[in-house]
Length: 359
Image (cartoon, rainbow, N blue to C red):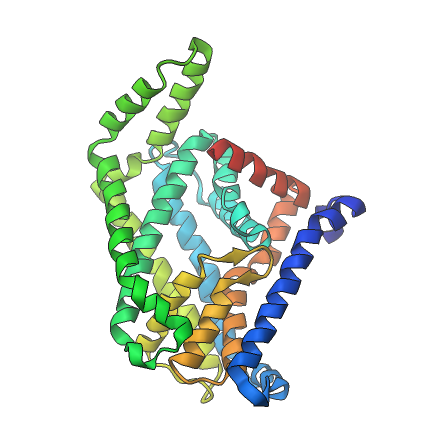
């Protein structure tokens, strides 16, 4: 059954060729990092293996639970965004589309981001443009919380304890926080108080088009702006903030569970876990198809250079956090996709179609 989600053999080999290249490159970078970080002693593979074998399974199970719960919170949050265009949207289809969408991101990387709004638009019978706008609003709220966590992390870490690899984060971090916060808040304020002005300006801008094209563009603009209507309600804004904060609390709980699973080998306070999360948000900007990338490397760097954790233990923690938050839901996403008649090829095609429509 699992084989049914893949294309024909020739297409599969062709489509995986870039992925093999990425895997080889990532492996080379990892080996270089391990050698540079471990020095003459090299990477201690027995310690790496023992770290996995000695993990507390109960804490890992809790981490999986909190990680999976974040998808329910994301679906509930999207229901708030969907209410202006479909007040009767049900949580079941939203949750399924959310899980499949994030599974697509895990496999396809950032190219899979538009799968979720595409599936939600299709199952909820609303214009795709409105769900692209909802996705933008969701990203803005997540970015604001991520910037706040990163700002806290910066206040807790002295430049003196950072190695050269992470020093750049503090050097540019202040500017990133200021610019990012102003940009996100600016968009929210404009769309809440000036949406009509923006719509009129957009319609005037495209008024030169021919009648048949103008009608289509006007409908797309109207649908896109309808996706922002949720932020014009005080109650909806409150629920969006509440769900976003709860989502990140659960993500933090997942980080904490992974750390606790190491028993006495890694001991971090709640504040230190927030520091780890804050720097990892930068790493999450780099997402390689199927293998992740930025998050794992950033977690390893923070644990080794800031908290003095051995690279073998830090590598285990980085892989586990990435697995729990992004990969553990993948089998569920695959099963849901199969039940809905989706194949690997159709999900990949949906990502391409969604990306083309978004542009």
